[in-house]
Length: 87
Image (cartoon, rainbow, N blue to C red):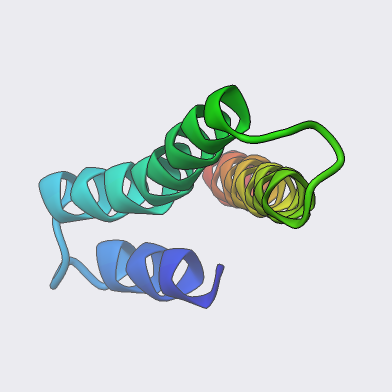
């Protein structure tokens, strides 16, 4: 999340462009997706209730929370930008 805030600050200072911000956002969202995909594949091949099953489920829960945090931060950033434009 700090990286998104830093990217926003850099965008506002004009030393960091729109494309760089989108690239950072892409990374922040794609990284958890890769972990989710890997964990779902593990679930396809392990015994339900096994330690590997529990581990994969923990990865999924953690990554979903991470993506939720990124999306919450994006909403906050969007509101901040909108309120600055109204001034």
